[in-house]
Image (cartoon, rainbow, N blue to C red; front, side, top):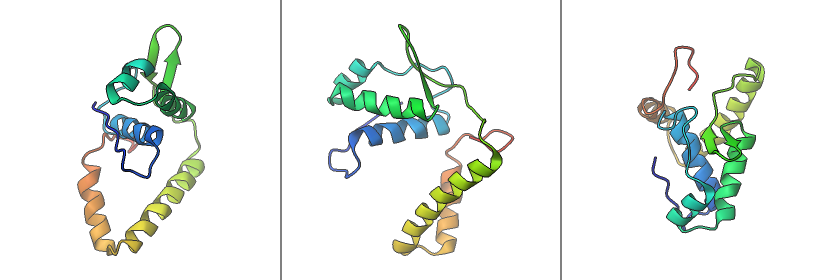
Length: 132
């Protein structure tokens, strides 16, 4: 996994890092129990403040994607499927609504959006039940 920072982005650096880690987990590039670089190591590598990396890791821990093991480091957490189907559906629909709103404003047709989704979906890891 290669993380990078776009200093020209309007997205804060910690959010850029968190999103890249989320995507790496969803694509299967980072597997459960895989170790991530330490806060110090990653901050040196990316030339960013250690607090920025810590904030990204903390956000991902709160989401249940990472787990900190004192004295050992930070690791990708085992997948959790403890949310009800209704809650998962509601959250995904909220995200889809934001995404589709942007697609409309960018001038995409429904067919173009579906074609884009079909192309992108091949890049993610899916289990037999459909969950990444």
